[in-house]
Structure formats: C-alpha cells, structure tokens
Image (spheres, helix red, strand yellow):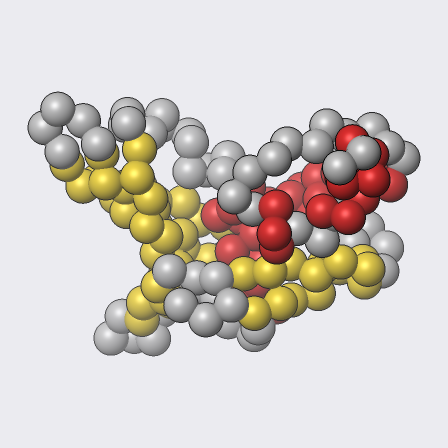
Amino acid sequence: ELPFLVDLVDPATGEVLEVKLAVVFDLIESDASGNLTIADLKTSKRRYAENQVENHLQATLYAYALRRLGYSTDGRNTLIRFDVLLKTKQPDLESYYAVKAEADEAWSLAQVRRVLEAIAAGAYFPIRSWRCPDCPFRKRCAEDIGA
C-alpha cells in the first residue's frame, strides 16, 4: 500500500478543485493480457446487497484515481473487485465486482463538489472518527464545535 494524491477535476467545468483525493489501493492486479483490476479488501457482518458495489462511492473514486494515473481496465472502464471477509457465524470470503465508467466518475465527482460546497457553507455535521487526524477539515470542525 502506497498513499498518493490525485487532482479532483470538476467534470462539468474542467476546474481543478482545491482539495485532492487521497488514495491507498489495497491491490492492483494485472492478468496475462495486461488488464487491470482494483481489488479492495473489506470486512462485513453481512453479505453485500446486489447493487452495493455498483453504487459504492469509494469504488468509483478508485476507478477515477486509476484513470487519472493513466490506467484503466480496458480504456474507458475500470474493473473493481471487493473481497469481503464475512464476520458471520460461519466466516466466508466473497468477491463482488463492478465496472466503473467515466459517467460513473462524473456523478461521483459532482457529489464530491456538492459536499465541499456544503462544508464551505457550514451545512455539515462534524463526526468524530479515526479519520479525523488526516482530515483536511479537522481545523474547521474544531472551530465549529469549540474544541
């Protein structure tokens, strides 16, 4: 695992946003033909719903980051696989797949932009978590809650 940053580019305007996307891939695999797959390792107490990976923001942003680095699975699409260790009575390992296209990325980037605009307008709810030390908004949250 090697963390890196990629620019976030608004798909509607081409504007490079002031924050960057921090990415740490668990694994990138290549088959004999050179096709890439992003594999992400997860744990869960229950099996994923049928469309859970298809609608997963992290999966789409991973595909975006890989494409920004100049790679994809087959040109315009990126294959994502979640390997999920089920923490159930009978533990199991399941794999879930999704193909992400540029249209998926545009929707996700628009969502990111909306979240950034909401934060700038003060319309957000700070949630303390293990992510706080690395969050670019931690100073803003501390000011807003008086910490």
